[in-house]
Every structure is written in C-alpha cells, then in structure tokens.
Length: 357
Image (cartoon, rainbow, N blue to C red):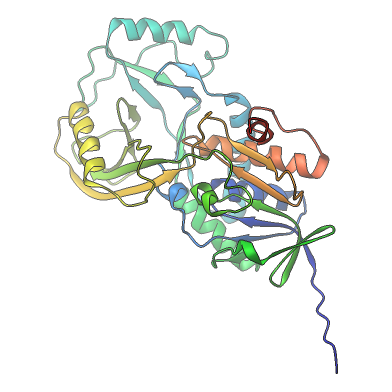
C-alpha cells in the first residue's frame, strides 16, 4: 500500500467574516507581513446595510464616545491606506449637524463644548443656516471629525482584492471541521496558527463563543430621493438624514431588540417615515428599504479576546452602532494581544464575561 502525505503551508490567520471587523484585522495582519485567509458567505449583512456614519459624540446626551480620539487616530490612517492600496474611495468627510429644540438644549451644547475632552469635537458656535424644507428656530450644533464610509464599496473592493491574492472563500464556515493541533489548528485542507471570528450577529451559531452576551439590535434604514431637500450636511434629530449624491439620502435608523431577522418590516418603515415627516416638509419617494441586526452587547462594550480553553481561537465582535470607528482600534488591540501578548483593555476583554459566570 502506498501512503500519500500532504504538506500544507501554515497560515498565520484564518478570519471568519469580512465586515468592518474582519477587514480591519486582515489589513493590520497583512501590514505586519502575516498570511491570512478569509471566509465570508455574506450571511450577516449588518455592515453592508449600516449607515456608515462616524461621529465621536453621543448626540443624545452630548457626551464623548468611549476612546473617541484613540479610535479616530488609528482608524482613518488605516482606511486611507486601504483606499490608496485598492484605488477606491469609500471615506467621505461631511459635517453632522444636531438639530437643537430649545434654549435649554442650546445651553447644554455650549456647556459640553467647553469641556476639554469634547472641545475638539463640538463647535462652540451654532450653525444658523436655513436649510430648505427643515424648520429649526433654535439652530444646529456642529460636530467635527465626522463623515461616513460607503461600507458596501469597501467590502466589495476588499473581497475582490482578497480573491486576487487567493485568500478568500465565499463558502460557509463549518465549526465541526476544526481539528486542534499542538501549535495551531487544521481546517479542512488549511493549517493555521489562529482563527479570528469576526462574524457579527452570526456569533450565535459559533459553538466556541455563543455563550458570550451578544444581544443583537435590529436596525432599519430607508433610501429616499428628495430633489427639493438640497442638503450638503448630515442632519441628526430623532433620525439622521445622510446625503450621498443625485438627490439620494439615507434615513435611519430604528432599534428593535426583539426581532433578530434581516427582513425589512412595515412597522420599521412607518416609524422612519413618521420621524422623517416631523423633520422635513418636502416631497420624497422611497427608493429602497434595508434591515440588519447590529452586533450589540448588554454592557455596551465590545467582545474581544481569546477562548478560555483553545488559545488558537479569538473573537472580534460587538461593535454595535459604532463599527466604523471601533473596528480598526479593536482589531489592532487583538492583533497586539496575540502577537506581543499585550493585555487587552479590561472594558473590551471577554474575560469580564466569564468572570460573571
């Protein structure tokens, strides 16, 4: 009998998921001369249908987003490097204006803008410009360092790039095909040192990490066409209105903690239309209606870290509504944790979840 031996080259990282988290980790790994292979079967559309806005301030309370400066300082050099490498544009800087509803809100804005941690982000002068079809007698507060990513363009371009370097598969990942080795894992015909699970809400199907408190919040958005609106800024009120050319605007978003499907609903559409009608007075038509489940966590902190038993398995999840800013920052933390044994920040480390059990 003749035995046939197969020799496989060891890959540094298998990455499951090609949304904001997966792309961020993949690019950081490649920049550090690591080898990767990415699996994504497009089963979790939350990155693609997200608004894509980035904003360093919680505009409901005029408070700073956790680690906002650190996130911005890391994320955008990475995104701009990807744009240059792939010869695409997906990052668009655009002001966000928060509509103010009273003298009290104006005063709260001024107080927040005077705080040292918020001064770089909140303009101390109100915007008094009149926008067609929007009434705002108390004017607007302007947020700096804001904009949006066209995430669909990013994902499509990065998937094409990964395919070109033979590092991408659109097949679903089969967890029961993982075999643990002394210094890595074997998955079908590939051997790797580590697996990064960046699956978004799909984490619930992952037998290694489905005990983590990933909740999931469904969000719905509309694309409308409104030729008379003529906005060159994002307006934030009970909904946001984001212009992206040719009289088209993205309007969002809803928050549903019960429905965990990616199917748009009539109730979600009506909620958006009611809030939109309170904000604008011009006519518009609905062009499209999207839905996706955001990977949110009960304690509002991401889920990053290494499996308590299998040191080859890692999770990068729970980016919630702020994935554009969080994705690169968290991916870098996880990469440094794996490669240099640098401790993760306690707020994001999944150790906090296992300690509660």
